[in-house]
Structures are given as structure tokens and as C-alpha cells.
Length: 554
Image (cartoon, rainbow, N blue to C red):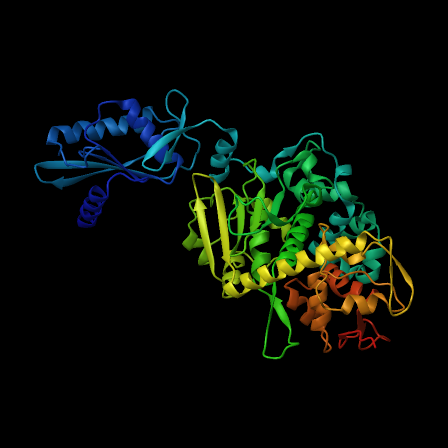
């Protein structure tokens, strides 16, 4: 043990001062030493080595009497000049001509620590810096469990500011077994009012009482941050920075003045479920589908696996720092996708930890409830599941900038495809612009007159997830007897997937969502109603062997 310490100190001396190691030739200023101990305690801990010249790294060993004096001084400083006081481990290491004194400081459990003047210090590389911002102080308190930002109050907001539909969806997923016993499933659940659902869960309870019991409403009647994030109608009215910025750049630089797509702030406004849906639409709209299999008409899939994008997106929304006044930022470049989540990894977690499946949720209350609205794969399995998809991904934990960045690299072939598609889109757009100058366009086949507004063109350039690729599925169905709406990429994927009959589970597994009733309705029932899919057993819609197949038109 002693030999290992000597070896470690020797390596550290050669390496010089770093974030976790500071050198002092002698203790001449108690206040200066106190600031160093405070900085270590507020960061990830470290070692203070006395007997080394901090400018040169050369050893100036302490005598026996100096060792005794230094040891006593360090103990006094840790207990009297650091607030709250800390315990440090003090060792001596024998070197030529004397000894070194090594004080080991652990990361504190009662952050934030400060000196006798009330100043909070943190490590900043090999140096230290003062902390003045409330957000950073709150983050320290969150890390050590003395403050839960997801349970903090949203002043002046009331239950009327929450979305009843989202609450109903949440309760349906959380209490599905209770509601099933009461016969409130399928159409019965859809037709039931929110109050009926609440009363079925707990007799005599309305929505407000249920939310109180679930701790979304505090004892004083105020709403929590978690309630507003999960159920808010207009979340950003109360929490303006709890949103996301999505931009698809032309090129590989964030400094580019040209972008292919951008989600308007107004389109992103809403609760986490709405934000999640909008982000995933942004991905499917701007990433490319790659062919799978040797046949020309074989099934395509998203160039970055949908499952991985789901996990990274949910992670950025649920595990972001709620203390940092910054949005989640999602950038698509020609060669990569970047997901920036406010706040560095909490509680001393490392990148290796999260890769191996270690999970320490920063917002525990929010996390425990978000699983009933957002796609959920199980505690600590999200990142590992994403990595199982064989993607080229890098992680960066930036303590200085206080953000966690996930970068997924795109295949070179997809970049070429993207450039080609971009040229094609530009040509198509120019063509449409010319076409739109005419009020009416004659249909050469029928002689009929059509309006000058191309429906698909308008929708393709809006902020919605609509696909107007060369696939003529929408065109054929739009001119059939039943009115149809344009499909999102995900919906189109489902329709094509059902070229052969598929079960509900096969379809939902395909797009990476759970077997909740809301997902069946959203991704299957709606396509049946719109005429894109048909049941193999329409006489018995709830049949256990029910499958769905693509509607073919002649």
C-alpha cells in the first residue's frame, strides 16, 4: 500500500499539477490552502502534496518538525477554514532528504462548500475558480441530494395549466392493470372522461386529488416542475428554457449560415412527450433510409438505428440538468448528429460507467414518472441498448461547459446520398416555384383543372414530419375513393413493412415503441382508419391472431 502511494506520487510529480493534484512547497497562507480544499470538495476530490515546488515540480522535502507542523495546520484548516468542515486523510511519503505530506480530499457530500469569506470554489483544470451563479450552486446541491429541482415549485401555475389528454395517457399506462380490472380498456378507456378514469383508480378521487397523491401537486397546492414538464399545455410559459433546439446544417460546421431544416421554437413548445415526438420527427425527416438486403425493393431502415435515437433523445430530455438555463440542442451535420444535454454527468459518473450500464438518474422523481409517457427500456439499459445497435458514437462529458454531448457519426455513403438528395430537392423546389406562379395547371391525362397549391410541397417545407419522396404510395391513395393524409416517414415505414401481414407486436417492435394502447392507436389503428392498412380478420378486430397488411390499389 505504502509503495503504491510512493509510486503514484512519483508519477504525479512527473506529470505536474492537474485538476486532481496540487503542489505546495510549504504552507504559508492558511486561507490559500482552505480555498484549495474547498475546490477539491466541490469537485471530484483530489490530493494536496506539500514539499513540491508548484512552479517547477522539484522536490523540497520537509524535515521531521516541518512534517508535524504541516500535519497539524492541514487538520486545523479543514475543520476551521472550510464551511462546512471536512475530514481529510493525511499521509507522509519518504523521499530523499526528508518527507512529503499528502492530504487526500474526497468529493464532498454537503455541497456547496465555501471558505471563511463565504466564497465557493471549484476546480478549473489545474487551477480553481469562484462560483457565483445560482444555477451552478443548485447543481451542486442536486448532486449531493440536498435539492431536487424536479420537485421544486412552479409558482402561479394551476391544474388548469395541465393537459388533460396527456394526464389521461399517463394514468392509463401507470394504472393499466387497475383499469383493465374495471373494464376500462380500448374504446371504453378512450370514451371515458378523465374524472371517470381517476375515480376508477381511486374511488371518489378527481384529477387534482390523484395528482396530489402522486406528489405532482405539493401540500400547499402548487405544481411541481415535474408536473409541468410531463403534463403542461404550454410548459415554456413557466419554464422557458425547458425546450430543445433542432437544426440540420448544410456542411459540417455549426458556424454554417446555411441550414436544410430547423424546428421553429413555436413547434417545439409543449411538454416532454410533445418535445420527444417533435425531435423524432426531425430525425426521421432529415436522416436517410438505407436499403437492407440485395433486392431493389427490399425494406429500408434509418441510417442511424431508430432505437438508438430514441434512447439518446429520452436521455437528453429526462436526465438533463434542470438547474441549467439552457435548452437541449440537437444538430444534424453532413457527417454526424450531435445531441447536447445541459449539465455534466452527475454524482461523479464517468463515460465508462454509463457505457457499462451504471445509472444514477439526476432527476429521480421525473425519471420514475416519465417512463409512463416516454419510451422506456429499463433502468441503466438505455445507453447500452443504443450501443448494441453497432453505431459509431462518441461521448463527451464537459465539466467546464456543463454539458454532456453525444455524437453519432454518419456513414460516408449516407453523406453522399444526402448531398444528392439535397440537389434533387433544390431542383424540385425550383420546379414547384415555377409551377406555383400559375393559378391553375391542366392535367394532361384528364383535362381537369387543379388548384395552384401543391399539397405535398407545402407540407414538405413545413415543420411537420412528412415525407414526399419518389414513392407514389400517397399519390395513388390520395386519388382513391377514400381521402387520405400524407404519411410521416415512420408511418410509411409501417405501411411498407406490412407488405406481408404483421402482428401488432411485430409492428411496434419495428419502430421501437412499447405495447401500450396509445401506441396501437397512434401507429396502427389510425392507419387502418385512414385506409393504408387493413385487418386480416376484420370481423373480429380484437382476435388474438389479428394481423395487419398493406392496402393495395390498382
